[in-house]
Image (cartoon, rainbow, N blue to C red; front, side, top):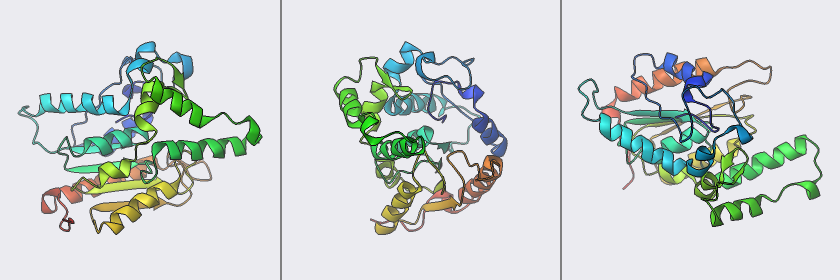
Length: 265
């Protein structure tokens, strides 16, 4: 699942790296509403279509994937196994999709999940304002934006690169609530230097699984890596991280039918 924005999945370098890492898997991506396969790599703001702003939300993406997967279930070439993968916004899609899609495993990168999406956004926004030296009394009122979005999700208005429908759906959502209902193996990957989603949010997901005595979550925290797996020296490690994730998936699929041996009641 591609991350945020209205670029085509065809233009994502990270999805290309994922296809290479999972070369012996059939790879499925589903475009967002209002996005053409030729859409440029990083369109933001007014470059996104009105159709995108009106219709894009994580819930809509989940519904679209479920429709496509249901259509493919009878395909003779498919062995029926399903692994969900992506980071950031796409990882939220994977988290919500895992149970209804009857997935065998899930890999979520740079998700966080232990805090609500709104809490993660507020943290990231505050970090940005501090880095840029913006006085606190000049910070935009995020609470007002989120409230307006929830009161008028179909208005077509946008903020922060996404339409109000997206914000209304996501602000109060906590991905860990979905992941903890999934009984297949989960690999969660996060960088300690992520400035988009706090690593503390990912650690909170791990704590929640521990409190529930669930052992189907594997957590890899990479010291000094940011949201896109780039280290403090500017070197990107996404390819090697994905290669390790692919090996993890293949190992788990070969074990116990990809189901955890220690599910809580």
